Length: 183
Image 1 (cartoon, rainbow, N blue to C red):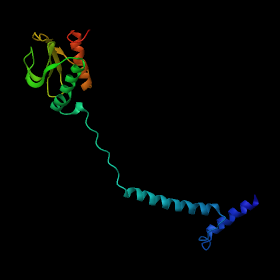
Image 2 (image 1 turned 180 degrees about the horizontal axis):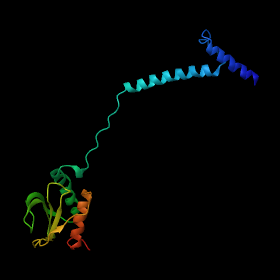
Image 3 (image 1 turned 60 degrees about the vertical axis):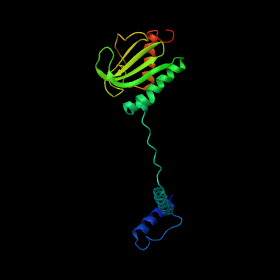
Image 4 (image 1 turned 90 degrees about the horizontal axis):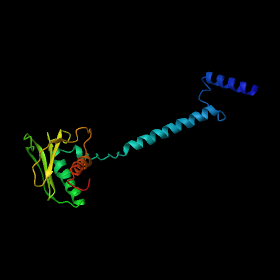
């Protein structure tokens, strides 16, 4: 224990003596660990500098969800083809389907209207107040040989309108009136 006290006292004297400050004692663990740490910090700085010279890969922008695309693009490129496909899967033929800025059936006010005629079965009109899929919507439907007589609100409680949701609710309305499939 006395040896430790003497070595501490000697190191304090050495630090106080300006002539002995530059002398490195190989047996002193404090001095060598400082040198090792100093060298490792220099090598870390070199590594960091090397990483910055490599160009970073830029992530490609995520494509907009189809529901965020412009109204006409969403309807014409996604909704109408999907409706046709859904009826085709169920063995039904779409005789006519289109989007027009025209008069809503029954009410007669001007809005965007998707008209769909399912051959020998029924017709439906899906109306949008504005050229936005989130705007107020209504639906009218009838058998092929009749005229529509009722306007029903469509997807009024939904916060997020998706392609699948629109299609499933159209099918639900037509099925509810026993116009397609078995109820």
